[in-house]
Image (cartoon, rainbow, N blue to C red):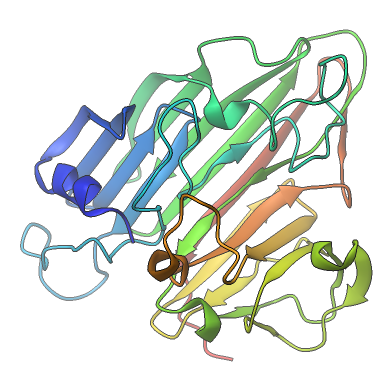
Length: 307
């Protein structure tokens, strides 16, 4: 689900182009393989919709609506310099308030780090596997020793996002991070997340109490959990099943605030997202040494297997 104003810009796009939405520079693609929108604030994927696997031929497929797409974006985004809630924000070089890599004197840097609000440069757009590959880097220095870059690949079968961190300094750095994916769902309370059964998790709503997931996860109320798991979960919302493969991650974060929604999220819109995040957290922080590199990646694809 994306705002109607963003849907209008996609409908006016043939091929690839730049535009402005909600005060942000965005890059759009509307091609035979599908649709993709990326905000240059935060190198943030806002929308992905692959072409149907079966049905009408490319170019004659049914017209998408604002409810289509695998990702959710709030219809009332904050003005700049606030971050857009939705899509796939890049949390870097720390997740939430785990400010291990924070260089500020009081370690009071922004929640989820500076990357998601920074402006990024689109350095290259290449055709890739009948789709597209984007390379982005921040226009300003975000850390004294760490340099991030993002790679986004999209085609008719999958969306792949990489957050690459290179250590160019002289001392080891402990970092965390996340690809904070907001999935568009029919109804959050009808969702089921498979693949976490038996995994240990920290319950952030209960003082980080440690528990074990009994059976598959179903959503019935507020959730904020860090699962110690490197398995690829599957999100089933009753209308589609999405496989969430991961790389460089031993944590999966599942979050929805239920009725305690943020100020930028209307109640009706809040029913239609669930965050299932590929992450490195306090459960699995990364120690990066000088000259080292870490890749945090997620790959979203259709999953047709039934439990």
